[in-house]
Image (cartoon, rainbow, N blue to C red; front, side):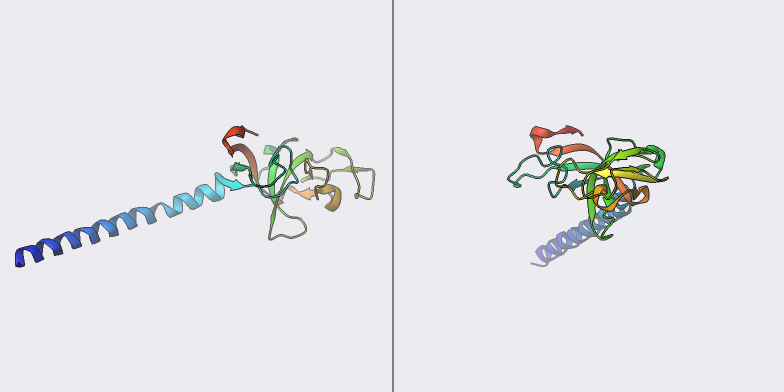
Length: 168
C-alpha cells in the first residue's frame, strides 16, 4: 500500500512540475506575441459596410472578412500610398477605429463629395484624404483631411472567408 501511495505522489508531483514548466514556457512567449501584435502584424475582423464591396461584400452581414494587418513602418509617411487600405483611429472619436482607403497624400488636389463644404481640397502636409468604397461611408468628406499619425496599420491580406483569401 505504501508503494502505491508513493507511486501516486510521484505521478502527482511530476504532473505539477510539468504544468509549472509548461506555464513558464507559455508565459515567456507573451512579450514576443505582444511585440508582434503592436509592431509587426495582426489578424482582425472587419465590421461594417463602409469598404463594401472591397471588404465585406456579403450584403446579409453574416460573413465578415478577417484580414491580416501590417503595422511595420506604417508610422512613416513615406510608406503610405494612394490606394492603400488603412486602419486608423476615428478622427471624431479616438476610442474606435475605422478602415478606409487613402485617396490623396499631402499636396494632392482632391475633388470632394457631399457633405464637404468645398468642391475641391488640397491635402495639407503630413495629412491624407481617406474615403470608404461604399457611397454611404463617413470619411474625409465628412471630417476633412486626417493626420497620418492616426494610421495604425495597412490591410495586406484577406484570410477568411476562404473563397476570398489573398492579397487586398
